[in-house]
Image (cartoon, rainbow, N blue to C red; front, top):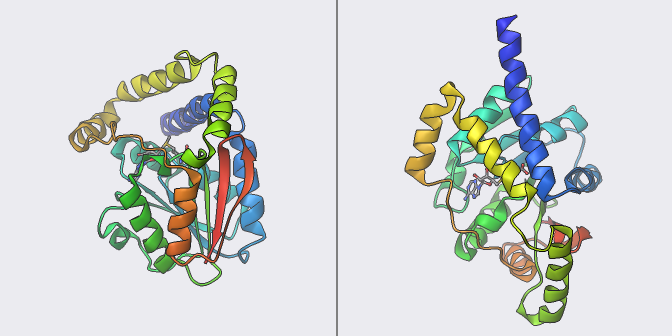
Length: 256
Ligand SMILES: C[S@@+](CC[C@H](N)C(=O)[O-])C[C@H]1O[C@@H](n2cnc3c(N)ncnc32)[C@H](O)[C@@H]1O
C-alpha cells in the first residue's frame, strides 16, 4: 500500500511536469500526435526510437503507449529529470531505457545501448544546443539511423534574419498570446515544479549533481529553422521539411 502511494507520487510529479510544459505550449499534445502520425507512416510496427533531451519522459511514455511494439531510449544530461523519469516510468515493461549523456558532446552516443536506431525524436530540447554541438549531433544521427530512418523535432524553430519582418510579426503574436511579454503563469508553474521536486528527500543527491554539472543553466541558443535544415542535409538527410506548425512552434521532419 505504501509502495503504491509512493509510485503514484512520482506519476503525479510527471503529470505536473506535463501541466507546466503545457502552460508554455498549449498545443503540446497536438504536436506529439502530429509527430506520432508522421512516425507511424514512416517506420515499421516494431522499431526503436531515441528521445533526445527526454526530460522525465513525456514523449517516451506517449510513444510507448501509442506503439505497443516499440522501444525507446531516453537521453538527457539532467540527473534530476532522469531520476524523476526512472521513478515514474521505470523500464516500462523492459521497453524503455534511460541514458545519461550530453547530446552533441564528443562520444555521447557511446553511452547508448545500441549502435543503430530506426528513429530519433525530440521535443522542446534541442534549442539548448549551440550550433557546433547541434551540427555534431545531426552528424551522429546520420550514422545512427539507417537509410530511410527518420528524425522528428518538435520545438520553437524561428525564422532567420532573412525573414526579419515575418519574425517580428510572429514574435508580436506570440507575445500577445503570452500576456504581452510579461513574466507569466508559465514561468511560475516552471519555478513551482522545481521547488516541489527539490523538497523530495530522495532527489537531493540528484540536485547536488545537477548543480555540479550546472545542467540547470545552459545558455539558450534558439537557432533559426534554416540552420537545422542545413545541418540535417549536410549530415546526409535527403528529405528535410516542416510537417506541422503553429507560428514558430513546428515539427521538423528529416529522412535519411
Ligand atoms: C524543456 S525540457 C523538455 C523535456 C521533454 N523533451 C519534454 O518535452 O517534456 C528540455 C530538456 O532538454 C535537456 N537538454 C538540453 N540540452 C541537452 C543536452 N545537450 N544533452 C542532453 N539533454 C539536454 C534538458 O536537460 C531538459 O531535460
